[in-house]
Image (tube, rainbow, N blue to C red; front, side, top):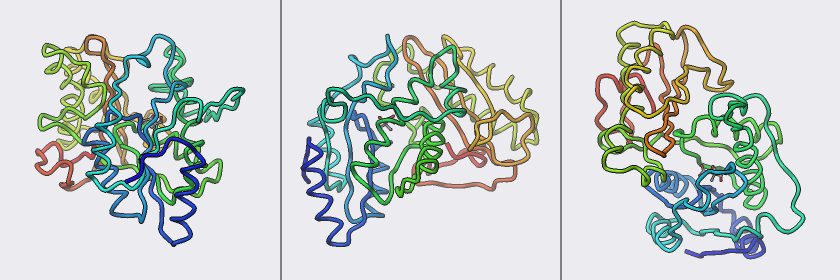
Length: 304
Ligand code: PAF
């Protein structure tokens, strides 16, 4: 496996791969790789001739006062992990390789970036502008056939899909199932911030989503009732930013569940902001995924 830090070197490697007819898979990350990221690497390795893992803590997607400085950085460990899982290239550029002096372009998706994590009071659309800007740049740099993202960041996936469609990127955006701890906590690099006291309370998010999935499978379709169930579970967190049931593509709220929807939540436990979501299907039959090998009865109706 090669570790590269410049765009020139990356292009040389990828041009050679393309000439030899190999397809290219891209796994964009900010490092601190966990099994969630590594499941994306596995999928890319299975589906492509060459897998590029990018590791770049993107400053433009952190808002003032957020954890840019504290964000976990463990490049050598990440390189070893990516290599063990069969990645061919780790691209870990310094900030000036992505944002050289004079850089002044922003890629901005409107609409679906202004709700949920992007709500105006959280100035979250600025976060998504940072995400779409860096992902557009990575798409151009790598020119991958496929790019892999975790469904845990459901809004990010919807925003990137919108951008890729609107800007005619050839790269196919693939969302992969959320990987969870055995007790249900969705894997996130930010889980490392949780204290021993906070860790059990962090489970409230997945418990809330599971309770909603359970109530739905018992026939409850009314979103106001389902939201009340979720908010009850979420009351052990320090603050609930949102719990909503929305259309998976437009992120518009729905009032009753008649088709597949996305239940999404964000809450703070201590200083840590956590997000989670389940895809809910009103008439789903039990599904077992490699990341969720022992579905509970409630899990029969979700893909989180
Ligand atoms: O999901 C992430 O880790 C980041 O938002 C991404 C997609 C790598 C862009 O910096």
